[in-house]
Structure formats: C-alpha cells, structure tokens
Image (tube, rainbow, N blue to C red; front, side, top):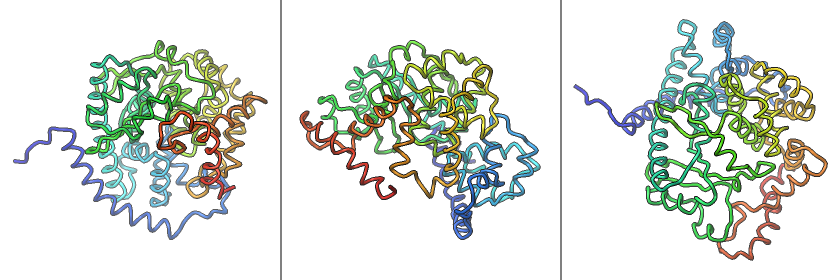
Length: 423
C-alpha cells in the first residue's frame, strides 16, 4: 500500500512532476502556434473578437455564459489559446471554467493538460498559504502588524477561491518603522534580503523590500507608503490599517485591505503596468461583482486620497467593456462621464492583444503616465517624480547619502537606455 502524502511540500512536488510532464505537450503545441501566428496586421477589434479571446473573456468573466463557452471550446486554436492564457495569467481561469463544462470539454489531451495545470496551481496556492501563515506568526511574535495585499487574499475576495488566480509571491504591507525589525525576522526565518541591508540606514527606499528563501525560492515582498511610488499621492497608511478587514484563506483569518482600498490598489497596480495582463482586468471585475457590500462612496474617497480616481475609473471601464460587468448606479454614470479614463481604456484595448510582441515606446509610456494621473500641473509632476526617483537599479553600491543627487540625475538616462530603442 502506498504511503499517503501528508505535507504540502510532498503534494506540491507530486503535482509539479505531473505539470512538468504535461509541459512537454504544451511545448509541442506552442511550437505549432509559433509556426502559424496570428497576423500582426490584424486590427485590435479582430484580435479581441477572435474565438480564442472570446473564450478567455468568458472564462474570466464573473458571469460566464456556459453555452457560449461550450461552443467556443470547439472553435478555438488550442495552442494559441494556451499561449495567450499563460502570458496573460488567466490559465487558471481557463482551466477552472472549462472543467465545469463536463460533456463539452476540450479534446482529451488539452483537458488533461489543463487539469494537471490547475492541480499544480491549487497545490502551489496551498503551499504559499502555509508559508504565509508561518511568516505572519513570526512577525506577530515580534509585535509587527501587517496587512496581506494581492495574492491569496485578492483571489479569495475576487473569485471566492484562493487557487483560481495565479500568484508568484507574497505581498505584505507594513509600516516604515517596522522595516528594520521585519528584515531581521525574515533573515532569521531563513530568507535572504535582495537589497543591501546597509542601505536601510541611509533611508533609501526600494520599489519593494524583497526577501527570497534560498531553498524553496519563495518570495516575500514588503511594502509601505514609500515603496508604492506609483501612487500619485502617498498612501495614508494609518487610515488604511484602521479600515482593515479579515479575509478567510484556507480556513484562517488574514488581515487585509478593505475591499474599497483593495480595488483602488489593484487599479493603480494595473495602471503602473499599462494593464498589459488580462488577469488584472479580471481581478477588477471579480472584486466588483463578488464584493456586493462595497461602499462606492468610500471607494471614490479612497481613490481621491491617493490621486488615483482616473486610474480607478479606467479599471472599471475595462472591466465593463471586456468582461460585461454591470456597474451600479450612480457609479456607472460617474465613470462614463470620465472621458479621459475612457480614452485610457480604449488605448489599453487597442494594444492588449499584441502587447507580448510590441511594448509601448518610451514616449507612449510617458504620455500614458501623465494621462492616467491627469491635471495640468499634477500630470507632469507625477511623470517627473517617477522619472527622477531612484530605485534599486539606480543605487550605487555605496551607502553615501551624498550620492542620491547623482542617482536621481542618472535615472532618466537609465530609462532612456532601457526603453529608448523603442522611442
């Protein structure tokens, strides 16, 4: 009789092996898709209305049409569908949705691959949740209060299932005063700090305080109002902590952002990345539909606090347009009146299908940043701050405080080198 697998590591290893075997089939299908790619001359409307995108939109929708999915499953080019789904982070949505079809399932090889992929995602989610619980307990023992953002908490809020959404790391919100102690706790727990710990004494702030476990390769990122540099205004962290709620993840209560603050955060996060992954739009749609108790006045107020109203409206536009989310009144009217947010959403829809092959140019990135901030003075001010605020890539090895001016002045040149080829 075989021994039962009892630990998350054992279960995860087994499912990882199964997924590795199924990847052989996926690799061959990806090669087939590469030999017959969708034409780059296709208009965005043609891309989004293709059978592949229509199926993914149904699978990611909070209210999918079962009959449409069943018909599209028989029409799509599966190698292309899997490529798109994996790039846009919705392979879990696809696997979960088509698994509900039963008699209208995809071809056997495809269904086997999707089930293996979803099982691996479930076990990965469980393993990361176990590690989250361990880190939470260690930080609590040190007297550090945290909020868990994105990841398993967002999946539970937006999809009622922590395993539907894929995530590769754990994100925590902590107060700036707790960073030093948190770093010590993480190092004692076996993690390695990805930033130079000596930089902490200088007051420099990275894009995130990242910790990686050398054995499991688990990643934990810590954020505060200083690391969230893409927020137009600083996050009022004490207010956010005062509005916290508990979200149940695998039977445990997790301290998290209020649903209003969570929606604002994911819209700003999507705008930061130019909404170039369909997963983030699905997150907005899921949160809006699943969290029926959301206070929309508080949501607008939370967005005003951080200067993210236009980013919020753009995210809601995208969810309504691509995933048929019905926004409640009077919010729908308010969002519809925001012409700039609507223009941003239309621009995202134009480049979304082809973003894997053609990223926005440096000029497009700059104009997009200003437009999503809005305001005659606020927009260029936002762009200048992002352009001259040094991140880890701009830091010198030294911990000299006097180097900050050079780092700030050098940042635009680094950005030009990084994106200038696409100018």
